[in-house]
Amino acid sequence: MRLLLDTHAFFWWLSGSNRLSLPARQAIGDEDNEVIVSAASAWEIATKHRIGKLPDAEALALDIPGAIAGQNFEELPITVEHAVRAGALPGPHRDPFDRMLIAQALSGNLVLVSIEPLFDSYGVRRLW
Image (cartoon, rainbow, N blue to C red):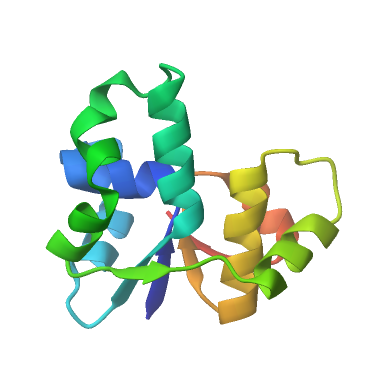
């Protein structure tokens, strides 16, 4: 299975938080699954740390690529196709990071690991 981690899932995995659901934890830990972290999540972590919304993420914000590589996860860049798809998504959901993750999950036929039930209305396969 190819898993795209929502930002909170990536952060909770790294911190060992029990806020990450058991099915999500098992899927991420399964070596048969490919685990992917979007550039959108790196952008979100760096932004939220800078503005004080993620004060506990300083070490992560300073070396997001190292954290991804250290877990043997894959990086997913943002392409023009992703940007167009995210911008064209219907509905009132305004969070640009979420819209990008939805677009990337749909474009790559990825399972989005996220606590957000709102994502279901966009037709993504979501694991939580």
